[in-house]
Length: 122
Image (cartoon, rainbow, N blue to C red; front, side, top):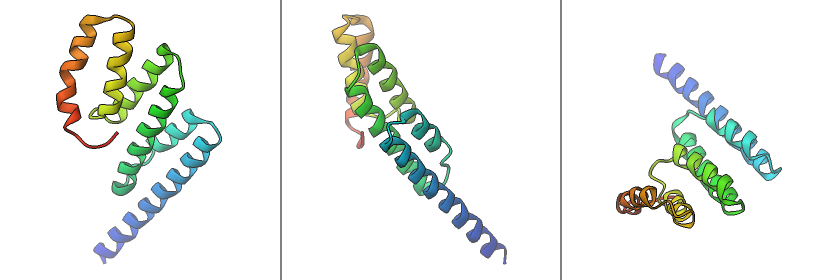
């Protein structure tokens, strides 16, 4: 009986997570990135949490690619909060530092790259 209740609770949580991801996708499609990200933050269930993280990083990288340097840096830093192992976000951050001629920060950024490049994912 306890196992059945646990299974039902897990199913309900997964269903809630799936619904949140669908709401986030709709918000993103409507151009409301901040709302989409906030909705994804509420996803805690195991399979959905991984998907939420991947979506958030992908959307933030896409948004960053369309912005000027200051906003791009903010979006990339947010992507790194979602996934600190994101080699794609880190590489873009290093590029901004190079453009801005912030060489001390750039050295530190580049020093992180070998570790991040050995990981999979955005």
